[in-house]
Image 1: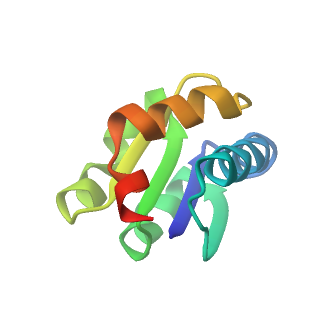
Image 2: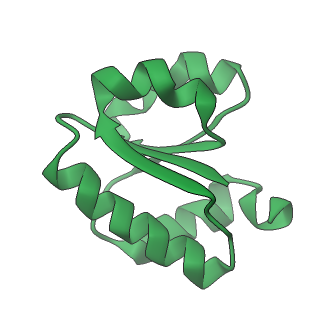
Length: 99
């Protein structure tokens, strides 16, 4: 699974969210083959190269182009919560059945 984690500046918050995503996906048994964290500006252009994008809720619409191409986009309220990310994967995606 190729994973992109993208937030405003692509430094601190996206790094913390990346760690939460890794923890949640490991708990669910979903193998990550590639994970990258970056800014929204970089992420919008790169999102099509990934299977799933995690981003704060207020940035989800910025990835509508990737979504139209079949990329799963997950908005997260608390970027540090592996539990929330896990719940969103379970309820808003088909990742578990794809792994």
